Length: 478
Image (cartoon, rainbow, N blue to C red; front, top):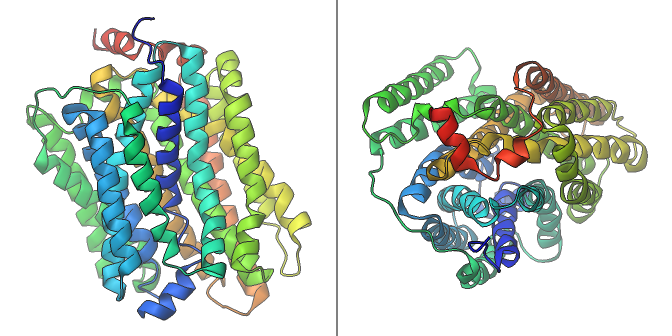
């Protein structure tokens, strides 16, 4: 126990804050978009890129961020990520044109892609000595992600209604500087020899970005259009090229042997579908509150706070204990099915509905499902990875969640629009469109739950394995 860091819980606070802010960056701009559109001259079609510029760059570069974390050192990459995040926030807050705003969001995405995997690597290093402590730490860290997503909607409403939309970016500057000052609490991690697979990084980043770009634009230009077909084909070709490169280069960005780690594949599939169901849920729920029930920006954000409270309580106090008793598989599969049930309930919203009847109970059921599935899926994806691949495993699991979120939101937006969600002012059609999106998200979550229960290996010792990832990795390699 001599290598136990006495400041590890304070260090966890720094890492959880980083996770909270990185995920909040995907949601805080939601309620500010109409004001940004007025001030910066976005067209209706361009406006979505304020969200997607961040998500595409973030998701596309996470694998590279994980690799750099392993090679250069997690603490150095964590610090670099925050410097980049602050720079992007300054650019986005100062933007006077639409395309400068989009560029600022893309720079923020680069920062987030460096922060997320390095933070996870640092967490594993701080707590891998004790499975019980690791479970608690992962619960607190994991709770910061959905809490950041939901709190972003609330804070975006506060800033937009009582200050100015620029504050959704300005807030990152003082918090980023405070985080940088607190990095002295984080452990030093030495660099190791190796090279960066630049060609592989370019292929996977371009492939993921092109796939998301194609899905985002498809509702506008048509799913059967030549442009959409060529873009999806190009994305598939780039991703195939990435895997070919990984088999041929000496030091690949993602050694394919990492997929021998137990549960890595099934846990990442679960994370993909979890993101594809959860993010569209809060996105369309926010629209229902504002565009159908007539809530203002602040009231809409406040209405989502009960979900955040439930998430925090379950993730920090209950889920980690349940995982020690029953293992990852039943919690991930069951959690996704509970999320699906909450989404089906939300699909029953009415044009003349109310928050207490139509939103609150169903949203709490959905949040319960998320709180049961997220932490076990994260731990299951990382627990067997050897220490030198911790950043890679973290990059993979963050990539799958965020790419799933982007693709899920794009696809379900297309579903919602096809059912009337683009008819502003027509409350019955708006509600019908939002209901269709909730049903689509429920199907995604249900598929994830069933596949997890059928495919994932049952193991009550996942949390214990997380205490010794290096040893587990040696077993797999053998």
